[in-house]
Image (cartoon, rainbow, N blue to C red; front, side, top):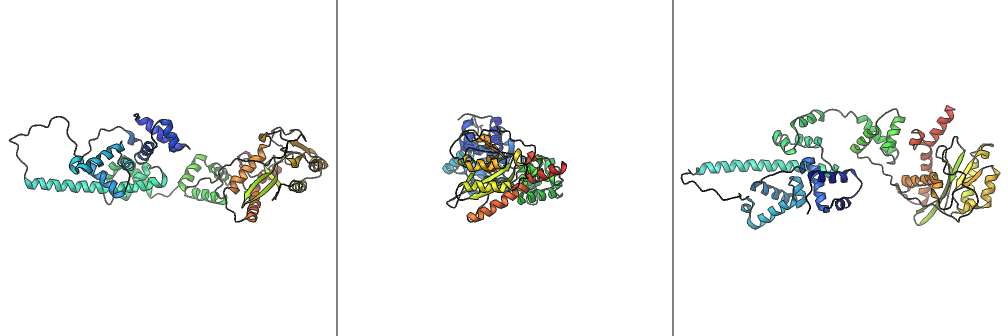
Length: 455
């Protein structure tokens, strides 16, 4: 197997910890077995970059025995044991195990290189009592060291399994907890942290958390929006409430609280009808509007729930992304669209329709004469996407993606009626509470009302 430098190992570990790719993909790219990369990650989590510093260590027979006893008592694998004791190669632990099984403790004694020196005839033998006394003291010291290592690594391993990475603060915390059982100096050396670092954290353990109130507020916002907000939107909501906080700090505090955005994006597949040439593409991807009721977009999306299909037909205002109205039905009939239009027309003033553009894809609903006559009756200009061009109606399709991620994939429903109730609540939430960065951290309705007041 190819040899890797400490820098290559550290880069491989950080690529996994900081990225979104799995261990197998990274291991294949580096050219190493996945189990080897897993061992590097474990070493890094327990010992940091010091784990990859090349050492020329001559392990004593007692140390080898301690390692094998730990592996046997705790049921750890050879790779895990090597990582915990910071032994560069797991194969070395395997060799110790085989040697011990074949020849016992004597087989663990390292043989000195070269010829053994001649014994001096006039060398005085040690007293029997002295030899016994030294052996007992050495065994007691080794026993205490082994107890200390077992206690330390058990706590460290517990922390690593919970949060994935061990910091100097975590190591100082473990030393602090074991200070009454073992000498602090020995524990600090075992942890591999500077003495000043340990006492720095000891001073700060009892201090109140300066971010305690902010954490409560972040948790409150996260719960209020049912896990739909990531750190950027929570940062914007904090600013709306008068707390100016950097997004990196919000991200760090959310990580400490164990909060993560629950939304997962899904590809959207819209309902498509036959292709016709009813109206030109007047919108032409110009999704900006200077005032409300200047440009509307519409489309139909499909839901599959409890073996049934539901079809949603909304109208969205490009000025602020607000959902003007919507209809939902079990079949994509034309009445789904005609009812939606009737509800939308009620939101218009008498003279607003003449300057309004309504854009859609080339679905069969929007090619029907009834649909065209309804728009002309209100003086509304019809616009349609080009053939096979989903980006021409990207805003409404983006809304469908958000809707499915925030609602359909996030919540569980008892039946179809329960879904319809939750959909109504979500549309209300989307219009009035869900903030957007492009709306200056306001919801669609807040942005519309703010613009009206400013005018």
